[in-house]
Length: 302
Ligand code: PLP
Image 1 (tube, protein in one colour):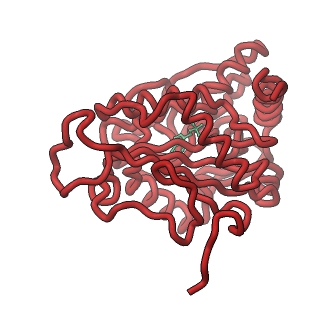
Image 2 (image 1 turned 90 degrees about the vertical axis):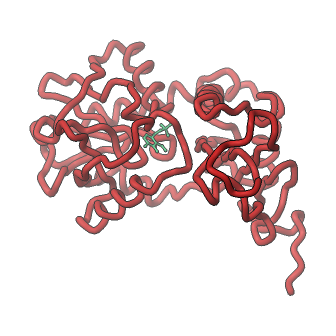
């Protein structure tokens, strides 16, 4: 059998598992890890630009909140987590990519009842992957299509858990319809969010609209950064529900996530939005997002 050593592993192939940096081929968790058997865990995806994690604090804030909602503590201090994140970026030799962080309740004999807080060592995993700038650029230039799908998820979509089955089934259904992303529609006919993105439209007056925060959507870090950047730039934005009919009548639309910033949406359910090309406001928001990210002191002075 081929012998692996971390030092010889190809770029992007080092995983962190509970205190150890391991080549992918031998990295693994216990078969009774509660995330594997019960979906009992949470995750974060952080954009890495020029070797620095972007919006690190908001991601760690959300991670702490997700864990709290599950009755769990952070697996280590924030300072220690940040060190591991930097070590992962260095060991994987990836300057621009995505860092995946997952925390599960740990490994224990399968039982629905979670062990009391502190009784179990949580499982902390990190992996990294590179960006595909070609695919991303194409999505930016041409825009993407979305397909509306029923939102069949649970009542706490604000927690970033690893339980993503309804999300991936919706995405799969959207892909079958020739769309890149699914826009999930609640029982009252309103769009909640995308299967792995937040959803936005821009109305005829140029006001950006995105669903207000509640248990029905994930509080996207990119959504928050865009809202702050738009407020600073004095651009019009409203947090409220919208329907697919409103999206079809919109001037432009886009989706937001750490993996794509703001990606233009040019068609919904096979019907063109606006003039069918990426919108000017989406482009501006994208610029604001990156301009703001790049002037962060921790990025500039590192
Ligand atoms: N909504 C859902 C359901 C998601 O899974 C994600 C990201 O994974 C987002 C929104 C966007 O969140 P963020 O901007 O923090 O990447």
